[in-house]
Length: 101
Image (cartoon, rainbow, N blue to C red):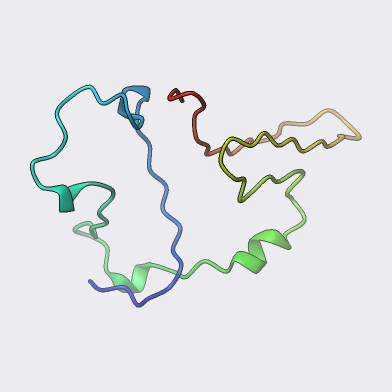
């Protein structure tokens, strides 16, 4: 499958021992294999993928606070207030500080 040029959203998870500078094993033999590769599964084809509309995500009215595009060595905060007790989901991706995650 080939995806046309564009912006895509990918979710990936790793453990703390795989953060930059703290690998728990030797680096890959093939440098081109570093990073993330996306394959389709046996029951998935290109028609099953949908393009993300970022404007739609921002306009759904459910985001309470957002901190994005933060530069190196920066600390940012976003405050919000709830009118009643409720469950919230926190989605965070970030870089470490001082070589640690």
